[in-house]
Image (cartoon, rainbow, N blue to C red; front, side, top):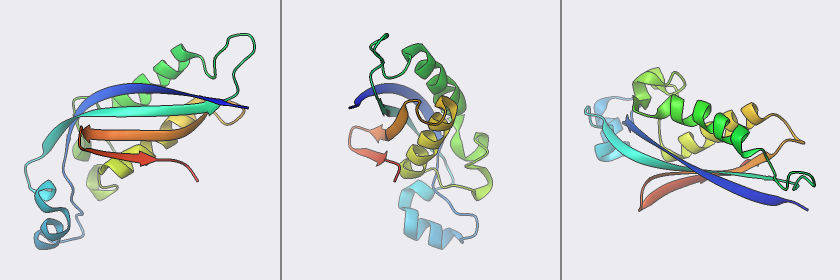
Length: 141
């Protein structure tokens, strides 16, 4: 038997969608206004869900202070008040396009690595929302 716990963190960041191997016309055709030269920003909401057994002694899936520390390092310190395309190496120089989908997958991978492998809590879902009308959810296979 297992339970899930979700913690929400926020961060403000700028980005744009662009592939350097495509010309401007193709970038604009595929990504629309999100490919414009001027970056645009969001106040992101990021929900990280961990799943695992409830510890009989603590009553917790994961030590909340530990989870909060991981989220501070892996999410807020990495993304808050940054230009994702320029300041986050994994997204810089055309590596990853900073879509919600790629952000959610990247965050899940980083948080899980920081928490450690099972039997530690498993990160089973990350949801990244740009605003109240658009979000991406990533779950590991």
